[in-house]
Image (cartoon, rainbow, N blue to C red):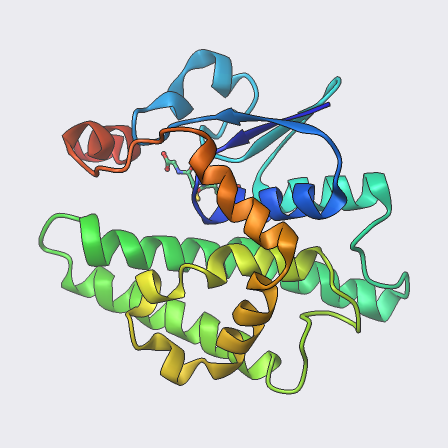
Length: 224
Ligand SMILES: N[C@@H](CCC(=O)N[C@@H](CS)C(=O)NCC(=O)O)C(=O)O
């Protein structure tokens, strides 16, 4: 059985969705990042980066959400696009674009908008600009397509879903007005029973929800 190290936030959500789509048994192990559990030595032995998610599959340990998506998709042979170089090239490109662009810029945009101390105007502007630029690019890509790569539902759609849920938090409540294709994609994905089960995973543990000083110290140790 897989051990899935989880916190209810965008990167773990991608993996929760794939595990639910696969229908394979897994044990959810809560890592409460607002309590600092990501820094415990036992967890760092699994994910040296001290972030969620991570997955343990027997003697295999995988960390970083999109690496876990690839690991599970390759292992099971499911939710990969057709095995043609041109299509697989698109899969790698969009997976990495989400991992290195959408995720980090969206995460930092939230950080500077909601949590960073002053002065922060320059950083706020830079990350907001880059987050918008990345999401507009996805919006354009989805203009005439319902899936990110090829004709099938793949791990790239799951990777995007994890962060698409957070768009109003990242870009503001009226962001959907400028990203109608991303909204259509998200609404469609949210109808999947596996997506609903992935969302419900958050209710299986009483995760800390307040962003108090303990949580700030745990998540932003440089600012202590
Ligand atoms: N590149 C990593 C990023 C993981 C990440 O930033 N996870 C967040 C939740 S979405 C986290 O665990 N944050 C806790 C912290 O920053 O201390 C991935 O894709 O898995």
